[in-house]
Length: 438
Image (cartoon, rainbow, N blue to C red):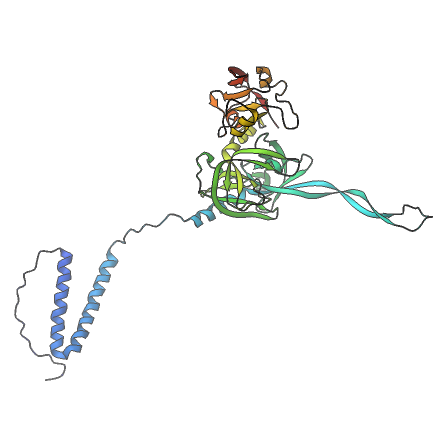
């Protein structure tokens, strides 16, 4: 018998009673039985090694069948996130950056030259003293900040302290390197906000005519529903040198009140503003603070001196009213009561020996300014120094609900009622609010 001839083997018929199972179970069971039978046959003829080899060859074949079956099946649905935080930041910066601009402040500055002067004259000792004299002027860059374009025809929103110098010239430098002369439309009398205007660029079309090239703009978000820990993105002209610098952080606090200053001649109290740990440096002033959707939810305005990762932004909803007034009225106006006051708390109550721990005490300014502005709504309503305003049109005035925060809800010409405490007695006074502009 040749080595490659197999002996005849009589395999008895065996009746197997299979338990009830699914179609896939039956198929798997049949494959196992087939492997066992064929391995046994090869085992008789070629020994144990042949049986094992046959087993693996058959298993490989059956495995290929399984692979083919799997390929024909629909892939399992695996959850894939729509976006990551990194992708969201990149997309937001890419979309908003074209509308973020640098504000360059320039001014004619005197040129001084040095010369030497002999106080003893030509006949005296040869003694030269250096002196300086002006020899004309030259335009120099004296400051700058950041802004962002809010309308296609060129309205730019920035900080008031960036645009304070009325004798200076302002230039807008866009992200693509173009320069546009800018004029100041209005400065907010209360908030650290200013609106500038640049003109649209004329572009030569294919017919030899000119068309207007509209500016890219930002999209406003809603700053009334912000949350601590929310991711934010700041973009600005950091240090006046690094345009469109991006920093990322979170909202660290809401409803903050700070006293901000820009040099010796400008200082103001900012209420109900956003605190963030996103890096904001000099030159970032007036730049946008974004959410991950790329919407502007704040205007970067201040940083805490001597601290790390403590910066502040004005909520965008405070600027929306300014923008609408500029478009409709050409100016920014606020309701004006015409009083100077001190917000009452426990310390003021003890210091002034007052009977209440809320409201505002009408008092002279620190530099002796009168408590009541002559001819104002308060003056016409008969409000006096020493009065305490407890309520403004039914709203109680308190630390977390200041008079400034309440009055901003109204418009010039609105008639309001004031609950006043005077000499221990409460009385009601009506007043018609005046108008306050820059």
